[in-house]
Structures are given as C-alpha cells and as structure tokens.
Image (cartoon, rainbow, N blue to C red; front, top):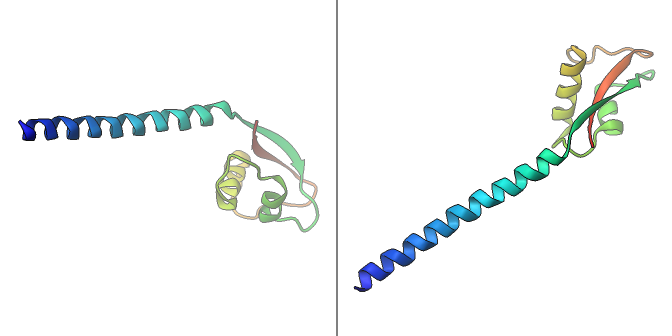
Length: 95
C-alpha cells in the first residue's frame, strides 16, 4: 500500500515538473512573438566599422554584437568589413 502511494506521489511530481516546463516555454515564446523585427537605413560614416555600427544601433533582440553583425551582413549581402563611408546599410531593430 505504501509503495503504491509513493508511486502515485512520484508520478504527480513528475507530471507537475513537465507541465511547469511546458508552460514556461510557452510564456517565453509569447514574449518573443510580441517583438517584430524591422530594418532602418543608416549612412556609414568615415572610419566606421560594423563593430562601431553595432555599438550605436544594436538594441534588444540580439544577444551579442556578433549576432547583430551577422544579421547586418546577411541583410545587406556583404561579407566582413566591406563598407564604405557614404554608403547606406539596412540595420535590424525590434519593436
């Protein structure tokens, strides 16, 4: 009898842990869905690098500068520091 009771309690605890995990993931997914990625155009200034642009333009929605720079490179179809003063770049932001 005691063994059956322990098995039921253990099962309830496991089920509660699984449901808590699932609900937490749904809340996180809901928060991420609220932010929508947009782009804006900026003009590259003399001597500016993608790292400088990341410092000035990176906002919430990116975990680090490398992620932001990779997104800028992808959007603009560039590789590395192939930017020149006076040219325009599209940079992402979340709103």
